[in-house]
Length: 572
Figure (cartoon, one colour):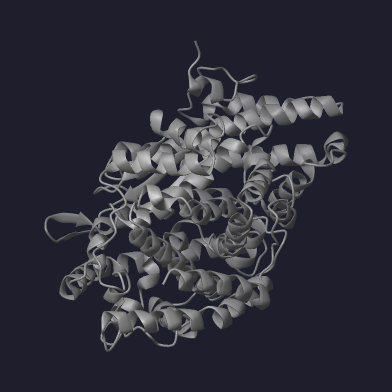
């Protein structure tokens, strides 16, 4: 009798079932077979694409497991070396052959005659072929290794407060009603971050320099312009991003100023300090959504099952088969992610739970990604399942808000449920300008690649001030901390320019949630309709399938953030 894992796994037709990838020579023969593959008909082309997709699925999953194991234990040098072997020795050779395979397709009449779902794939191949430079292969390999250094540094950050705590675990104290405790822990956390301020500044300087060289090699003036092409952003431009920044800057800070003003009054404070922003405004003790990991898992599966039984089954599949690592611990990389394993067809969820509301937000977010991965698993090619972030994050951020309507599993008391929802929605509003700030900062970084660390920090402060929410938070005496708060954003180090997508997707998620509140069944039909498409349509077409629009004008931003604010006010 076959197991669930065996049933889900993509069946190999071309590669040996027992293939082990220890070096490039283990897979080189299959790439050479692909290059020599005779394509004299449309049927032969479809067979070729299936063969290539299978190879890509196996390769990507092999690298993914190396990455997963390394981030679960950054202290293990053997795991780190295992990952580095792939990105420095195997992946560079794979990139060279992939470029040749792209050209083989683009020069073939039967490929060019393919229509429908293949249109986006064609554009992606054309873009990759246009950007490929042999001299960039080793540079990209070096970058892949360097980018992991951020996780190595930050995973070792701990403080001493009632024992040794990771920064994720320490953040629990920022919700304490005792202001002295909040300030003490906040300052310990920031002082710990400051210990690596120079290390992380130097790391980013090296990354910017190397990324700029990649861009120059490919014929671009700067890495931003290169990366927009590399990310295959077919549906919007850098100018659209600038307009989005301006729309957010105009629409959101006034609302946040009102929220913070009310917070200050409730807390009975003359001024709000950074350590006053996570405590409950009514000075109630921090919400405790679950007792332990087992309870956390059970409640999340119950929550998803109530939305739709199938969604609960998806999470149970991950839980029962060990396809997640949820708890925070020393030596574990920061952050959270969902890794879509294209051959297993079961994704892996990674996060750092510390027993707070944010953990719920993270798991339902990554759970949305996981459902997306499972629903789109039957698409025939990896290219169809390799989602742009504007689409992937729509699934996850929508699930954050949709699931919120079912958070009674975590919070039995109505009062606690309202507090949780209010916190979530205030977080939605506060993250939108943060996304714009991080994105605008990245544009500056790569438009000015020779900047100094001092200029970088000064620019960060200037951008922060542009998005101030009525100067409602007092940073007096903390300027040395504030000017390097960008260092907590791993995207800047590990996945440059992958962040504005969260802003676009957050707007889409608000629209999806609004739709769900009005007609749950229809909203879920739309939710699954867009997920089933994978990346076989343009982003605007995918958003249309979701029953929403892909746009980011001031009017649209204001309409949606006003809706969120109105929902917050209903909660009291």
